[in-house]
Length: 398
Ligand SMILES: *Cc1c(COP(=O)(O)O)cnc(C)c1O
Image (cartoon, rainbow, N blue to C red; front, side, top):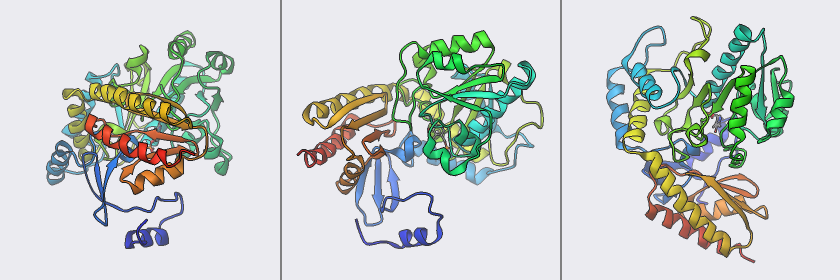
């Protein structure tokens, strides 16, 4: 890498040491392109951890942000603003949901879902409060969402965690049935586990979970923070599986990089009463104008269909690489949420070698790469990225 720059010296001196940053400083982005402070150009297959759905600085987003910034930025949830209502209407009209709560992040949306489930339990299920989640899931970094997350590495530093979560094996309806008790109020799942390694459930699993929730009057919560907004080839992941949740959370892709989270529910699950939940910044006009512009573009321009087509194309190219390099153990994915699994722990080294050659790529585990590019990616950009990855993998072929 280059010499340590001022941005890196400052961050290392003053930032808490919560993440070991990759030593590159980005200064500019456009579409799938990023530039670092030395003027080097990159192709971005990470898109801000699946958040930059329309790539970097999409003109539709920049215009919406600029116009709104000049008009009104924040007034709190005590008042009405038009961007709030317009984004809520757009999301409701394009989903199976009826009601919306805006937050500032995914974790905060999930916190809202957890609180909503507890209200459901207290009002409808004699005070039931327990939420069943799955091993290997990821629901966020707050205390409650860490408790919901079925991964010890996120939980261990923070015990004791809030009570009321039961983590069961993923993709196992029997495990859910066994864990259900009079204390259970909800089941919370990612339709496809993202952070956990792109784990696709068997074809009837989510339908079985839906049927179980109906039988026991439990809320079914889909965490679509990573799978939603077109990434899987449909606007929302639940549409792929023919299962409607009662509650859904969104964040990442909604505003292509501007911070916003959404908690949505069906009318019957919308059980908060006035004063029971809130946020200062959530639903502010700036974030909602950004979310509206990006979501409208995603819907009008059929961006999910592009994600589906490009996902197939990219997966096909990765399968070609798998046939070429025996150390690629598995290529799996849906739409533009794709994992490449190696039979050895080279993912970090592959990531660095790609970075050197101008491809930004995400390594999730020691043996696992995740490809989550912006949803506007083109065939030419995929060919370019695959070319770099092929060259890099060739150097590991011994
Ligand atoms: C990223 C993610 C979260 C957390 O979102 P933040 O905005 O980082 O709080 C929660 N659930 C899933 C499935 C995610 O991918």
